[in-house]
Length: 169
Image (cartoon, rainbow, N blue to C red; front, side, top):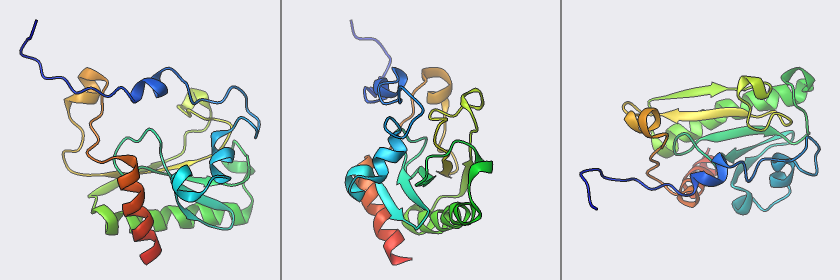
């Protein structure tokens, strides 16, 4: 029976909710960030590669352009990074903000690392820094009431936009 509700279907979220892509172990063979680094850029959603770290679109973004800055080396804790890795993760975070401002004009950013599963890390075995672009009014009742996020752009379109903007920087 039809009712007065409009529905926004996001079936792609079930993969994340059911943990389908979460690694079974904590080793490099099961780590998605180690696997992604070995893929071609577009297939892995990598928008930029540095010497010690890379920038990749989050497969389950909070907002269009949500990037992860990942060291190539499989380490879990921020204190395990070398000085060179720490510097490059910080530099790529800054560059990501510049690139995202050029690509899509966000009004602000959320930056952060979740250290350990208890702190919210979905993949705790491989350190990664979140760079989440934000716009005024971009979050509404959907995440609170419906556990749903509406994303106005497909990942492949976002990849092209951010990849091109990074190349121009």
